[in-house]
Image 1: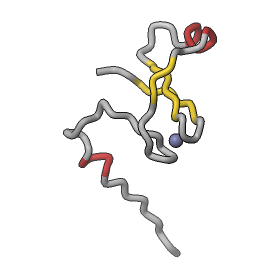
Image 2 (image 1 turned 45 degrees about the vertical axis):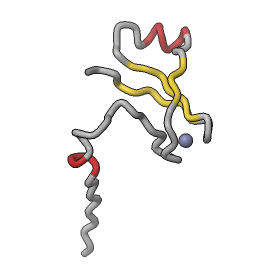
Image 3 (image 1 turned 135 degrees about the vertical axis):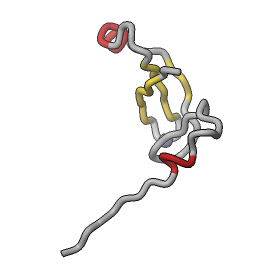
Image 4 (image 1 turned 180 degrees about the vertical axis):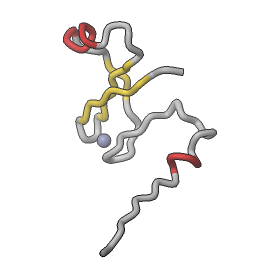
Length: 67
Ligand SMILES: [Zn+2]
């Protein structure tokens, strides 16, 4: 029987460094802030979600923007 452990060192070690710079999970390039669509605005109204886009791989992502 094999046990597989997925250790994520950056989850605990990367808290004090600049967290404002958001990067794409896929290609690690910086994300650009884009406007939320009317659809997202409706469903995420009042929630601190912000929409970001990676222009390198055309991925859109929502990030929780709470302080
Ligand atoms: Zn990307």
